[in-house]
Length: 436
Image (tube, rainbow, N blue to C red; front, side, top):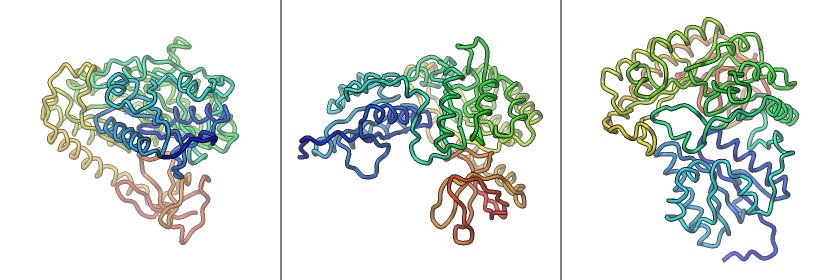
């Protein structure tokens, strides 16, 4: 068994789930290092004696991955390979009592807003002077920026308010300071995230203030792209579109989760809108920001979804011609509104419907991408792998959208730089090109 001896602690933070969790881990990393503690994120060296697992509790698959990860590190602890295992994040917030009873080998569990308590385990203090001075894990040229925490929406299927609490916006001044710090350290692209970015500012400024935030961030020297994610369609502040059209460093891109294309299902989902209102909003977006790329997510198999509802969703996807689309199968989550409804769509039917939507979207994406052949785009080069440089246009977010592939055998590009790339070929989800 490994003896602790006099060696100083070395901490490894393991992050599961979404980009919001990644930001939380980066804040944790900054605070621990700011207190002089040797801390790493997703360390490959496997030499840490303390592991912090930042968990996801969103849907069944994510919860299972979190539990499997906890058990793997608990086994390592019992083998004497590590000394302590701490668990934080959404799963811990939502199921702490159950987890404490079922996995007592974990040294402590922390919720989503308990970073100060976690720091006390290291005899460390939360340093307010580090707010805005977040360390970015991985590549420095892009960074996620969480503009708000929590959500006040009543969506039937969603457990996020149970794990993240009510909506709390971060002040514009704090976000500008963070953007300046990130830019100074090499960040060129900001990806704005929240549980609901549409709601930004209502609590602090008594109005939806996303447009002003975008303007202020757009003025930060060194930030060349700003990308907006997770805009709730109901109450979307359309003055954002004017700012997007006016400012060249705000990407013509919007991630707007719509969840369904049937008015009956939108009502069951408690989304506060209709198919007709949604279609009108999409038209307005495209009219006011020509060339905007719209990404959405949908859910297949929510309780009460009939074959007719599903066909209406297929129609909606075909008519809307989204640039990017993802779809989840419905997960029956306890303590949500929909948990009181019968989970009446069989799992295989949910999956068949999700597959059908993606097959339809593949054809749409292929047509859209074929139209890009011969065009030249500004591309941010993210990485080099398998003999290629991999980048993105302003219409693409990391990990979920198209990538631009350039042969590294024939061309030289620098990771973290922008390049003008002419598209020479395209598939459903990738573009191929060469530098101009």
